[in-house]
Image 1: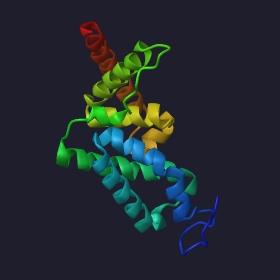
Image 2: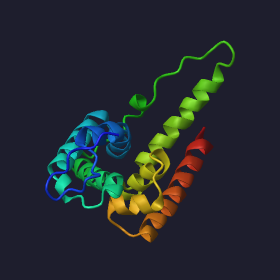
Image 3: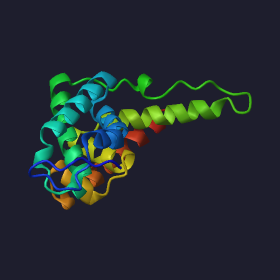
Length: 179
């Protein structure tokens, strides 16, 4: 991991911006995509997030919380983009189409159907529940990290996860009962 020369007011262990970008760009893009619902908005959100991070690195006083700080900026930026655009999740772009193999023609189709159903159910959550679920399940963040990133209490994160799970369970039960 590369470190920058400390600027005034920055601790000596602050990672440089290139390292920050390389470390978190993939996680940030995935989270933004799942929150916003389309790749174009997600790319814009990630770009805006890293620009904001670069401009405000001097405000980060504890480098051990850089991930939570970055995702806090990302989630706020993504929520603003969601409010601005209110678009549907293009599920067909979420996963590559899978061609059936000679071994088992139905398995890839069933996996794709399940993945599409989960994506639709995830998109039907309200933005804060969706963000919490994305950070927890797709970015493997702890409840504490999510609370820091979203600027709320750990109990709020647990509540949002609980309600998100309930909603996802109900949505998926309805989805799979219809099949």
